[in-house]
Image (cartoon, rainbow, N blue to C red; front, side, top):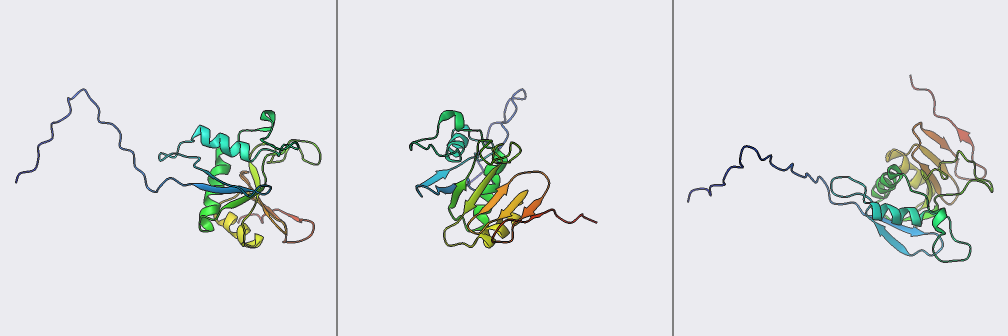
Length: 183
């Protein structure tokens, strides 16, 4: 049987660009420290573009807790950097798609938070994973390409700064350390 004939496109019509999906959509599995309710967020579509509603869910989840309970105050919700969402996806993947527990996300300046903090800029999160030691989360964050990685006794700070910066030895007060100059 001959192959079916497919009519050619008219010369003036350009064929649509094919959408190439190299992997399934990545779902970010999160929990907040306070409620431990699971929240699934798909921050990027199949083309790798930001999904605004999903990023708003992430921004709301990472906003400071409302001291009166309930959702965060709208003025406390800061747009989270999409690079942070991508980093959290990579860290979760490094840990077998484990749900990340959000210990802290966006912080308002003041009360011990520097205006230069990456938390204030929506570029950092403090995370934990149930049943996983912080040192293992730190290793996963480093493999995932985190800019800043701070190790604390019960959680790991990750951020998307451009220059690598590492601190903490797993206990007590964190020690600041800059990476050795490359040769």
